[in-house]
Length: 247
Image (cartoon, rainbow, N blue to C red; front, top):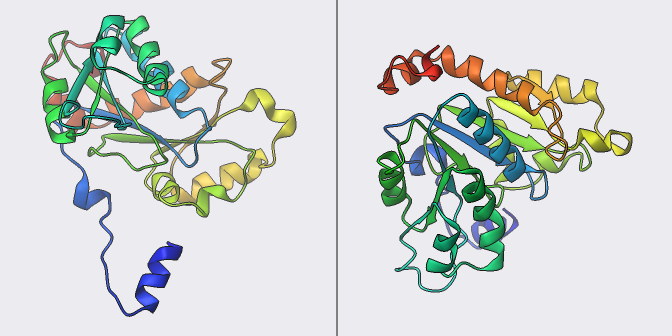
């Protein structure tokens, strides 16, 4: 944003595209998980949400925010269902750290650079797809229109949620806020009362969790499930009405 100020001060004009201008719509329900800063425990939270969805009998496909390196043409659409797929796509160590936990727990994860093509492949994944979970990165807002958006923050960097771009957007569009790292509660700098007041200001529920210990993550997920079941639009998009998602 500081560069934007310099550009406009020099007499130039530019426009900034937001979520409504750039997000792709899926034929499947999408739960997106983002964070206001790196290191909040967003990926761990995403993976726990996926585990609980799978325990309920849902076929979950994850899509990861891009980490493109090398030949971008070859990385148009990447599908990871086995450990061998990591070698097939010449993954970096950083990519392996993100993709391998999904593969070993049994869910498919997609990545790449063409996010229209990626979601179309995910929707018709050979293993089936009831729900797509967007595992965001770089504090970015989701690339897809979400039926429910979850934003993860931590209580150790007060003020960062409103002073970093695009993390602030990720927070302001949240429908559920997860305050992570409660296992380090003795070191917290944001008190529970402050967090609750801010969540009320955003008109969204919040819960404190620990992705490390799993504490309260299930409670957070129950909030998500309730919101999903109350959304008739999601129910209509799940073809199998006998599916656990539809209650």
